[in-house]
Length: 235
Image (cartoon, rainbow, N blue to C red; front, side, top):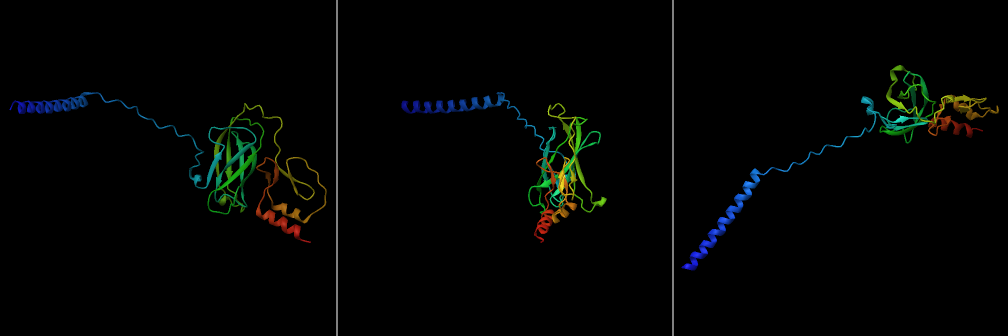
């Protein structure tokens, strides 16, 4: 009998101890101060490109980027759709006074006839601007010449006037057509012989502009290539 009583006492003590431990845990959780977890602030989103508004449906500029300090030569890259004609479209750079610094052609880097975005590249060479800011203009090619078909997108840019490589006293000459038969595109005074070749007629409708390598030349186009190939095959 004594043994049963002792066993009952031990069981009761164990239950009371368990209840006491549970109560202590509950009280501790109720009155203890929760650890403060510092809020994680989202990282600032880097500026990925120029805001072209509604023109973003047809144009993207990947270089230069907003905030870049530009020098010469300037390489302009991006993507466009429905903006080309014969694989090119005009690009222009002006200073803050509206004076033209450079004009050139953006050239498609793949098949431009697709309805999808097609990468382009243009190189503009220019002398030191008179202002620290300017405007980069991308114009939709408009072979019809009708004002109703004109379209363009422009973004503000900044120049690095402190760049020691500028040569303000030696402005970059524009590309011009020369030669006896108008077959040369150059920014220098070129002399040619006056022997006429049938293919020279093809250059009358071709575009003479500064090319992606920074040099003046005839802008590659399927129509120009086809015309030259046909003229060379004619006996």
